[in-house]
Image 1 (tube, rainbow, N blue to C red):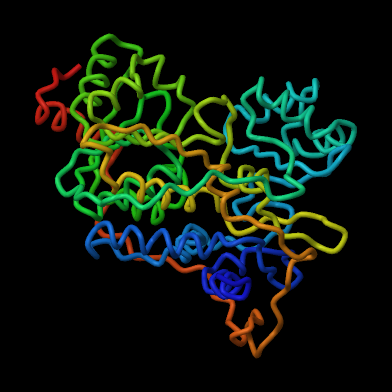
Image 2 (cartoon, rainbow, N blue to C red):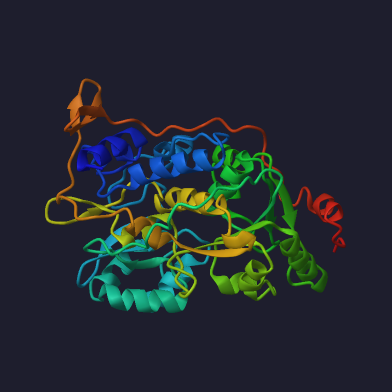
Length: 410
């Protein structure tokens, strides 16, 4: 694979159109993420015997095609994350959850104004190092950390494994937002029976996002809501996991462990457990697609090294594709398996030394093109597939699913 191949894949993905300043040209992100996504999608197609055919590179910008997001430079396409200078470099800081303004106030030791939390945070960061931010953010559960100045070593790609059919298998999906639901969506396209599980206190935040995008990822899946604060709810959760062929989680391991759900025990019993975390199960780091990608080093660079966001929460679709390919492989010896998938590791594995500043697209007629050794490639806009069906209302199938699996209804 050549650098020009990667640039062509980037240009065709839709992510280049989301990278750069709003009043400047689109920039080509570093590394091979678009190529990685294309190859991963081809692997999914191979493992499913051609049943699941998606444009992996286009998935990187699919959400933006629904939301109409555009490139915003040091502000993420979705608006919830910012790149800010620290005492020794740059940091990515997310503020997307209802409690994040309070946690940011705890970070800097001051109450933040309701109208704009960012100026005090930016002032604090300028006098503190990235390491100080990472330590305090870890303690507080904030999605924030320093931007890598060089590409770290990513996790090794596992060797090719024999595929398996998931047609008719039960997938219990505890995940939310984008990476885990994309994995579940692809397994559903391959014929798996997907059950989305939420709790009354923690519904999927993506339900508040663009309805078309949510419908795309969840159409045809059944929805179960169980309360782990009640004994009957905890029992039903455990019984559901016991009956699952594949479990998907996308939170810190302790979140499900406190409900009595043990990933290692489930894998030992024959379940394929897909565990998606910010930086691996051994850490408690919190992260979302934009801050994770930037923290791993996937940022465009202006002259002088100023970082800019690449794409839209790009770590999410990259990880979702990777997770689906893992779930579609046969466990060794027909046993279960626990897949520890670090979003940071997935992103880092696509990076290598790249030119700085980042290559810019150039005007061509009414659009933009990226020059490669194979000739100019047009910068494609974000595009999306058409949702096939509707997404279930929260908890719509709780009684039905429990009755079908012979689990006492709470």
